[in-house]
Length: 304
Image (cartoon, rainbow, N blue to C red; front, side, top):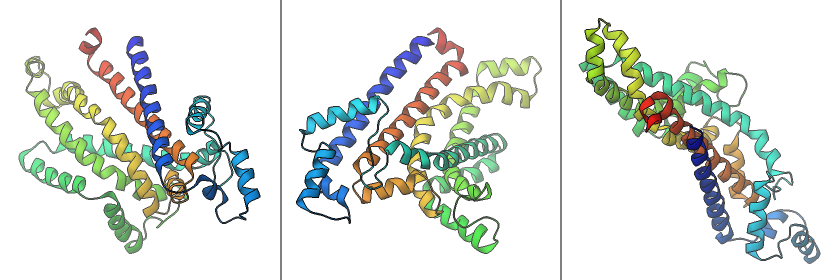
């Protein structure tokens, strides 16, 4: 187990380095001047530009700036925002909690709904109806789902706030919007896994020992059907990260979405780089947890 964790940690560091380097090179090749981004709408003169170049060390070669960025990032220093003139760590930290609340709530809602759908819709007609609904949810852009939910439950019935982050009621519709596509995919994978697991010899043996069909389903079928669902955790993290940016805009919520859009539009390079590295770190953690979950779900993998 320790060797597996060490191996995953090493590959995770390689992914973080690759993500940071790719983002750095892409932003370096983007049009526009860094000094213009720092000045913004402020006063502009040759003396001010010289001061900015000296203060931000922009006169050094690009490779030196890149290595300095990697060294500072490894020490937890993500630089200072060009636009806000604050440490990037503080800018990200202020907006991280609302995004994490939304992502966790959406993940929990999606997983629980998928489990319920997979278990209760195994009959012929229920399966067909559920599969159709799941296909519609997966094929529909999340922002469109959000607009429909807003129109019905906020504007029509007034059950939830239209925008903002005031209390748990404001979290319901954004979490449902993000969680429905996740539930659609996971339910199909779980249902197929259940069907295969319940036809395996161990399920036949369990029935022969007198276990009820419900016990076989819960104690044996669900456990073995979890492996393919866990594989989707990487995709799930990508949906949550990318979807949160859009859904936060639809529902007018604070979070990394607004910070990211503002940073990209104003060429705030340190903030954009920090968001990319943070997203890559989140992706690495989720996939490492998924790999380790394999070992807990199936003991045969530990022996191999």
